[in-house]
Image (tube, rainbow, N blue to C red; front, side):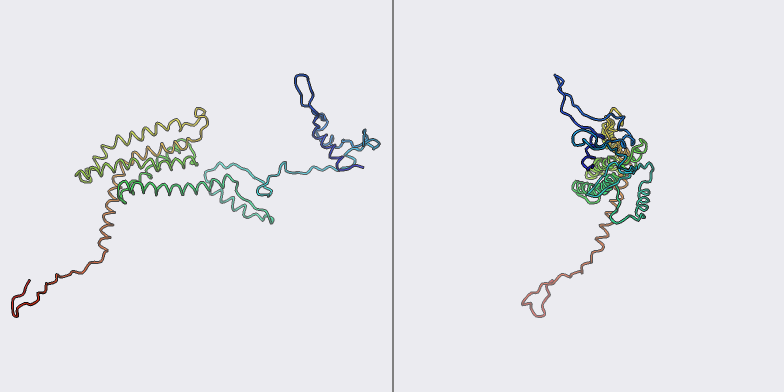
Length: 335
């Protein structure tokens, strides 16, 4: 004589509780619940002893029945919660990788997962975080390329030349050794913040090259030859370049410190990348950039000469003699 509603009501009260009206304690109200003691509902044997019927009201006249008399009990593994994504059941497997060759390991995992013969309707994929990291890497590659193009266009308009900006772009390569050394020395990971630091370096380190080559051009317009102008510009721009790099590096020191004093700020890879890149770029710009500038200038002169030599030669045209009407017969010719 039991119905599903009877069983549901008993389970609801036994395994949970029944909320009662608030108890008025004079100056305050107290939340009240009616429930069994925890020691009376803590294991499977207590569940089997749940009693139905034999009480007052609608249960009057029924023979008391324990749940263990009318039900079989089995322990079956079930998920504690069911996750869904796009209306599909989703199960996540989480792990931590502490090696250094993540790309190779990721490809190995993909090969193992693709080898599974999954039932129809089942599929697997990386979680949103890894997919987002891959998208960020692609976006950063596009950002680097766009930054190079924009920096080149600005410098080409500044110098009114297509060759000299190429020499200054090598200043960006001068920053890579310092950035890599700084990250390795401090044990920092090359994460998204470090990539943004490289993007910032692309706009900062070219300033040293612009300062140096612009002064070289001014000295050459003043009458100095190329070698003398480069030597003099290097001496006169040594202090400004070093001072500019030093002030930027010192200003980034608080941001580069990782610890409780910084409030857990995670921008330290960015600051360390910029600091290392500026240090190496400032030194290498003064030493190597003049040689690269001379080399590119010679290549530009050679390319212009080759272009001029490839033009077709124009045929020589002899000057036409004027014709005079009514010249005397047997007379003199007019030159």
